[in-house]
Image 1 (cartoon, each protein chain N blue to C red):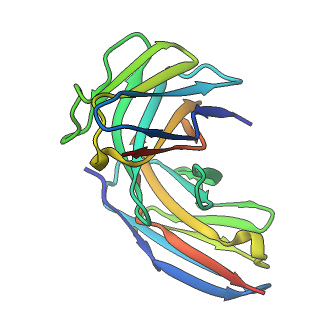
Image 2: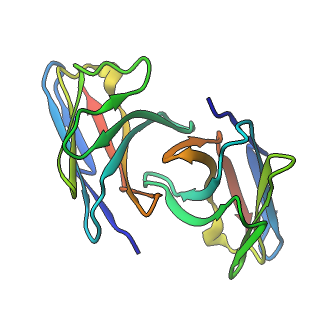
Length: 110
Length: 113
């Protein structure tokens, strides 16, 4: 099955700085890569996703890049704000089922 | 955007009783819904895949007789935890697919006394 590794497990950044989270996947058949943000006590919220026919996607302060050859994808958050503090999960899928990374706890220091 | 409603958000029950959790897609029809379990500070663990009108597919190690799933319509799936015990206490989250994208409910915190 698919194995998704996510790094780092925790990330502390100064407000206004950028945050980068990296994930690798094992199954070359995976073709869909979403990122979710989960706040304490809530369900995951889809923040951005990318499909294998695209190398990069951007939505305001959030961007995702995908390197199919190396089987890794990354989340970039620019100009971080305190409300960006949360746990972020990457995931990979080839058949509707998602395989999740272990999560990254992001703390934005004011 | 696609909205998934999950109810209740929090439930406390006595050991040996059953608890039903509902998951509804509010503005789209979901042929497939998923049920996850999440322990504190851990990732989401897929329990089962629920397809409308057919039996759910359970992941290895998940007891299908303990976690009963019903997906009777394109907008509603239910998870019933039968004969709940303290070790079943956890955060249960559902998701529904719209155009192959999974949208999650807010989760249900189950505490079994």
